[in-house]
Amino acid sequence: MKIRLRIISLVMLLVMPFALQAQEDEILPLTESSSNDIQGRFRAGLELPLDRFGKWDFTWNEQVRLHNNFKDLDKIVSSVGVSYKPFDFLRFGADYSLVNEKSLSDGKWDIKHRANFDITGLYRAGRVKLSLRERVRVQFRSDSVCKYEHPDPFVTLRSRFKVAYDIFQSRWEPYAFVELYTTLNAPAPVPNYKEYPLKRDNYINRIRIAAGAEYKINMQNRIDIYYMVHFNRGYDARYKANVGEIKEWSLTKGCAHVFCIDYKFKL
Image 1 (cartoon, rainbow, N blue to C red):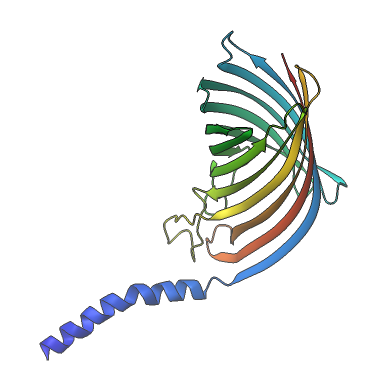
Image 2 (cartoon, helix red, strand yellow):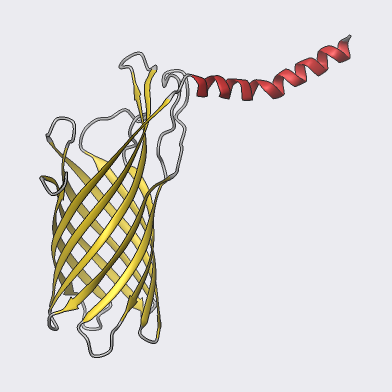
């Protein structure tokens, strides 16, 4: 009899975590929504060498973004940064951006602070130029949020592989790239944040595919024209205030066609 009780107890201990997980999933119905949009981005930038060897550079960029089929101004982004290229095949970079973003819910403008840290590997095979960039983005909010709903800061890993072709005796340089965005500290849903510890649920929240061409006007001026398509998805949890019980668990999917023009002046 004792052996049977021990076996039953052992089985219950093994099964209980799965039962609790099933119960937790059961009270978290996932609702889905999707959207499509045509967007625009326009940027002007300045690049300033900081040393006579061309290893250090300072950059300043101003960008405006349009969404809702080019009807509404979405973001204004001001950025400054530095880059260091110790070798022809390696470059480090860091920059800070002040992001003025218009809220989709109430139309108010919110400020976010964003920092990027990246490392890029470069390789050239004849006229083909290859690069792989790994970038860590840290974005801080200026408003107070529940850490179970929105991480602050929100940390993302961006991995980009780019191929460019240097056309002989041409000012045009076509290119294409693919980029993956991976969340590093996204919060996972819990039945009640007052009873459960904070969990993480990292996932790929954006796939970006782009093609374009850079045109060299002269030694100082360049213009970059390109098209991107974004495949986005994001999980969002909402909880009852002061109670802590989850009230919504949703997945938002989106596809955005983005047309971009960048201008750069290099001293």
